[in-house]
Structure formats: structure tokens, C-alpha cells
Image 1 (cartoon, rainbow, N blue to C red):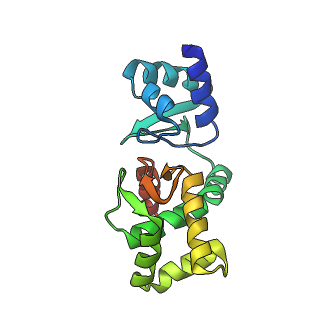
Image 2 (image 1 turned 45 degrees about the horizontal axis):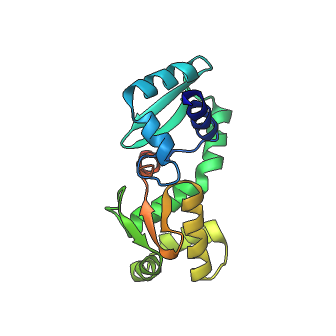
Amino acid sequence: MVDDIRAEVFEVLSKGVVISLNSDRYFEIANFLNIDENFVIFDDIVSAIGYQLIGENGYFYLSKNRRLDSSEMDSFVTTHKKSIIAISILKEIYPLISAGDTILFVEFIKDMQTKESDLIQQKMQFLFDDMDEKSASEEFFKLLEKNFILERISTKDKNSYKVLNSIGYFVNIVESV
């Protein structure tokens, strides 16, 4: 049973997923890793293959034990570029956004219009070309869901999204750039 959860944890984390404690989708994995003994044992296991388990501010991810070389850094930036830009948009619209907050899709569209920021529009156009505002906003939310930054509160409610703890990971990247 414990080996099964460890295998599941490794399978998810090795895909680059940042697991949040407040995620319904990864609730079992996050709670497993939140137990100090499990965290230490799993970290020992992955360190044998060159990784380190990081757990901070309610989220967990795998990191290499060594510094990334330039090609790995380029690959990381290329892979996460859209997420980083999306977080920068989110932070511009909601400067105080944090884990556990709720974002309403219709309010997001209204708040984005209220901001009337050329920078936000440029970023949205970079992400979604010339899509209309509603379609671009839908894709924006899909992007944040795909990267485990937002999670729909209920499958029946297509308007309400919970901000996951992993937002802290991406905010740290945005703020360090």
C-alpha cells in the first residue's frame, strides 16, 4: 500500500507537477508528503537518483540535486513561459492574490477590462494571439488549470476557481525575473 502511494507520488512529481496541499485532485498525495516521516523517506529515495523533494508553503515538487546547465534552464523557461506570463497577468490584476483565494471567471473578465492595461493586453495577445476576450480568458483559465495553479471548485460550477498553493512557486519565479 505504501509502495503504491510512493509510486504514484513519483509518477506525478516526475512529470513536473507542483502538488498543492489544497488541491482536491492531489489531496491524497499531498497529505502523504505532508507527513514528515513520509517526506524524509521519499526524499531519500529520489536523492538516490539525483533529485530532491522540495516541500514549502503548502506545495511539493522535485528538483535536481545539482544546478541546471544552460540547456536545461532554457528548456525549463520554454516549458513554463506561458505559465509564468499568465501568473504575471494574474498578479497585475490581483496584486494580493494568494493560495486559497477564489477567482470567479466572469469577475476576472470584468476586472481585466477595468484595468485597461496595455501590458496585460500585450501579454494576453502573446499567449492567445488574436482571440476574442472571452475565448482568450477561457484559454487563460485552462492554462492555469493545466499547470495546477487553479482548480475548479466544482465540476458543476464553471465560474469558481480555487487558487492552489503552487501559485507561490510561480510567483517566486515571476518576482525573481
